[in-house]
Length: 403
Image (cartoon, rainbow, N blue to C red):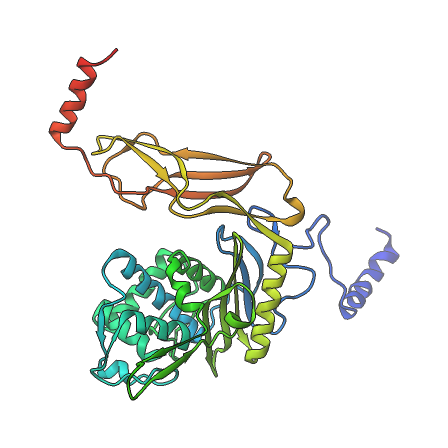
């Protein structure tokens, strides 16, 4: 380096900074890849320019297609109800709750302000009626009534919400209530919302309610109530069937939307939008981008037989390994011809007892020699330990009927 260049270098740096030049290390990537399949985190144009935070995710694989400040903890308003609906859906699928169960509204539940269906203290509705009120009309009173039905109190239900958030690995989330009404310290992030939305969608019946545009409560009474979905995209964007809007003066306009076309389902989340029109337009732009650029390649569909589980000392020794969910990978449309292969690696030997949902192996998907997806594989059913006489009979069978 010459003496003249050393003297000019400080002036050159000042001029560069003033002119807005960007310095990038040699070989640095212009776009950050998200997910093992190489989907880019940012397209060439900003998809959610007005949002404070946003994310676009493939619902099946969890691959992030686009994100903007997606880890920033922000007030979520009524998007909170995604977690409320998730706990309700789990209780229904577990048999702890039935859609036909009656729920009596407490004075506390009936006192909720904001969006509501105007429950009266002591009024009874079914779980299904309250669930559709939460999903479509974002009813705060219905949310609290369901919380009290499941947990006995909203406080206990909130503890369950935070426990579930921890199980899902949601690091930017803390719930203070079940409705999303403003409360100090009640926050989550766009990425966490996408993860809980993805988990909710595993309960496939939920889109019957989140995807409906209108319905009625208290029909054939003197107080009928017309439910209209606060998510207008369920009517105006093809394939949208959920999930939840949110608004408070603090949170601004928020939305977690999901749309499906064929085997490809995506989740788009925006937070802190200036108005509903902008919120809907930017969600639509995100969905347009996903469906134009990507497709989902199924490896196994829910219900497909993937193989056989060998279980030692179990009431059953062999169980068909049936896919509990659809396993797929996200690929760009121009990559559809590339060779994709997969490998199922099971835990062997697998000793009883085994519970339905226990991880029993991994499904690894490759493009060439590169791993592009790695899924946990769950046991399709519960298999208890075999009794002493059963084990003895097996041993005797091997002794007397061996070749």
